[in-house]
Image 1 (tube, rainbow, N blue to C red):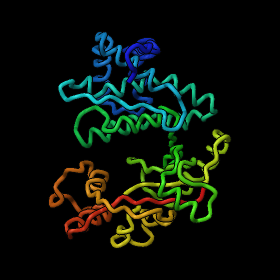
Image 2 (image 1 turned 45 degrees about the vertical axis):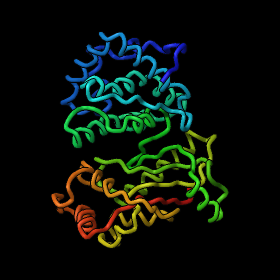
Image 3 (image 1 turned 120 degrees about the vertical axis):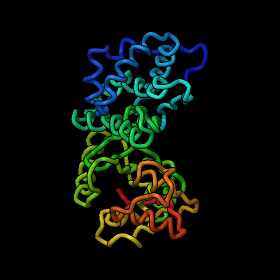
Image 4 (image 1 turned 180 degrees about the vertical axis):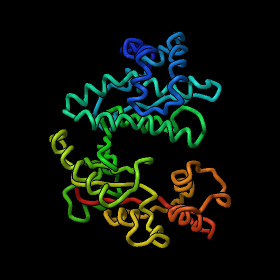
Length: 313
């Protein structure tokens, strides 16, 4: 947030689409259709509230500052439940108001229009994730969408690639393996988006090809020696339950383990697989191999852990 005495920054009401244009913008961002009318109505409430507009202007000014710089994005304010639908969707309007800035940045970097569109459409996907979890409009983790709208993350085929910096453990592991890199150096962080179809080896291969071409062309000034991934999908315990040729095991085999996590995270797999991390384990369905793996392991008294892997880029 801006401190007292700092300028309010760009006039967000000059950037925020009007009620006629807003539905098309929302659909371009893959916002679920059932939330379009609600967001158009909430736009009217937002524009009519001077304090809310002041906050919006300040958030946009803070967010677009340092566009494209790694780790210089936005720390979104939290809103209590008492703020209702407008508080729940406020971050969505910040991203909409920031659209011209990220699009200008993409244009400056020569990012193809289809990559830009698919990357920013993750806003709508995460509204669908919020709906699956909570049943209402909103964003569970607005800071995550901030990476997309700040030029730090791109959707390239099945996978997402984030311009990032190596942490201590992963950087040390890569350095020990003989790579000319270490903690704090540039890397690409790989993420697996939901609602994107199977995580097949063919789809992942295609994503890696696209990513190598994309970053070499549009970020030639940056050197990436390592790609990393931090996900429960890299927990090697999954290999006890899944066949060796499964998509998840094949994905795991791409990575070298950087270090072993010691803190259990059982809610992570439950949330990603079933949509809600707080669902009772005894009530979880066992319809697919992944569901059975997650459920059977927990019911047997086991725990899941985040995996940390890397490979040479």
